[in-house]
Length: 233
Image (cartoon, rainbow, N blue to C red; front, side, top):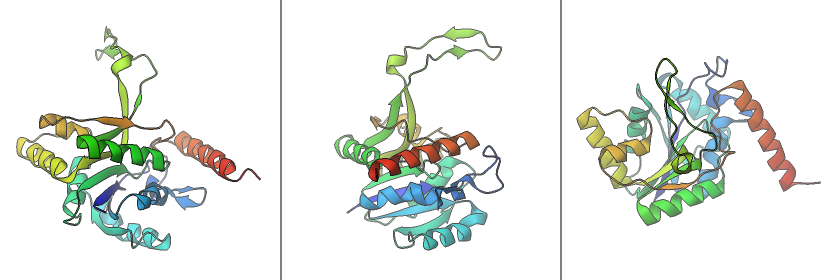
């Protein structure tokens, strides 16, 4: 198997109103980062976890405690921007990596189905970026609040992770971005900058990103519902 995952775990707890990195916070007793990694074990030969430079040892200890030490091939320090952290992770992947799935450690509710669809897309098109259709009306406005445009939401998508790519394609996109001094808002934007087509795959509205205490509460509810569905007794 030549699929690998990069899991980004270098977040903070500022908007979560916690002194602890939000990916270390427990969800039904299990750290969010562990829940984010676990579904990839059925699809990938291994993973690289990117941690804040001063949390590498803490991350290694948590992964070992929860049985992820063998699946995670390396824990590497991140960079000053998400893009640089991903690049550090890419450089740490084994040489046989053919496809890579890049995932935010704060998206702890990712499912097998979302991962499978991203992989199917990357195998067919060279990329597969989890996304969901926008349901709200979107307004483009000036800094003073004056509305300038109402885009047609039928063509708008909210982007999630995992974002999957052929290894050679995402490395080439990163190298061009580095050469051009381009800083993208997500991994797919680097391909766009390099003129490489990007394809979306179906995400999931439950694949939320833990950012605020409300997100944490919602995640707990979703996990409880999933547990009840698996064991109705």
